[in-house]
Structure formats: structure tokens, C-alpha cells
Length: 149
Image (cartoon, rainbow, N blue to C red; front, side):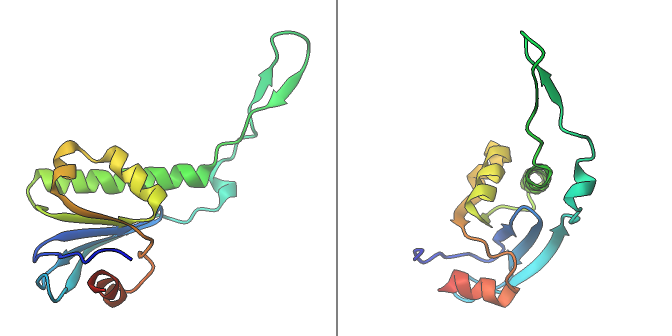
């Protein structure tokens, strides 16, 4: 159970995972949330067969004729990481231009970690809460209920 969170008027929220992000602004007040979508971004869901087309690389041993395959890149994990880096860059830009003065970040734990790595110090200072939950697939009224609970 998370402690009660007060989200003041004009606070921005980013609700995301590795494939979708909702940029929301509270146009209500701390007691009655009214989350307005400002921007929604989706990552194209490209099939794995199209993400990595090369065969795995080969490693030659320094002695003898033995060869072994190197581990294949996890292209979906890489695509999720790239998507979250873009989310962080969007947040950094909007904090720098003073659009975002208060921010709540909501993402699954792994995604939250990747976001944290890529947020500038100035962006980190405007964060009033970080919530390690996957709420991005919920409709906005359900997100409001989760935050008001």
C-alpha cells in the first residue's frame, strides 16, 4: 500500500513502460485529480525477426580450431531501453524549458531504473514522487483512482 500522495494542480505525470508513455497534467487540484493527456507515445511493435536480421557472431578460440556462437542481442530489450531514453529526453527538455515544474514518474521497476539513469539532475529535482507500478495500460480514470486511493 502506498502512502497518500498529494498531486498539486499543474503537476505533470509520466506513466510509462518500455513501449508506451502517457504524459499527463493534473488540471484538477490535490484533492480531486483531473488528469489531462498532453502527449501519448507508442513504440512500434516490430516482430523480433525484423529487429535483428544477422546471424549470431562467431568467436574463434586463441588456441585450436574451436569456434562458438556469441549470445544474440535481445532486440526487444534494446528497443524498450531506447524508447525509455527518448521518454527521459522528452522530460529533460520540458523541464529545461520550464514547462514542467513538478513531476510524478510511474513505471514498472525496471523501466523506472532506466528512466532514472537518463534523467538530468535538473529533472530529478522536480520529481515529487516515483511509483514503481505498471499503470500504463489502464484508462486515465483508473489511474486517477489508483493515485487517489
